[in-house]
Length: 186
Image (cartoon, rainbow, N blue to C red; front, side, top):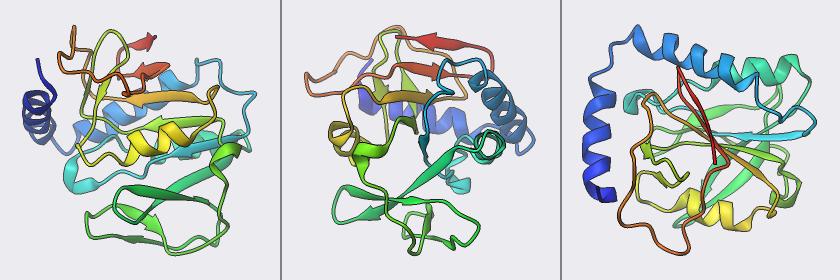
């Protein structure tokens, strides 16, 4: 199936989720993250969920990272399709942007080369680790800027598609994708 059709299908599937299902599934995803071999890393980058899009609630992962004394980095939209990255501290003030994405107003900027692990938002993914995002390209640009050894972890409420048909050579694959019931390794 092609990306545009997958976007439509998975937007519908997400919006059909009940309000109770999102925290329950998000907690299961966070519990599955615990088993990943990523805990020697220091800088963990995670998106902050857009509630209106019924995204995976990353607050459970944030709590896990804080409990392990990890450095947490969150994105802020900057320019047409790029991101800036800020350390999440007790002093960080978050404010929704024009897409309802919570992001830091300001703070301590973290150079992209310091980031060890990235939790990647997505709508769908396939058995080869390809993902379908919202189509704006923010994470495509960001992941290309990361070190080659950065660990890329997708988070999804739904299981893998067999194959995304319109993958481009420049698309960056995930290393893992975590769902409420499965951990995929690519």
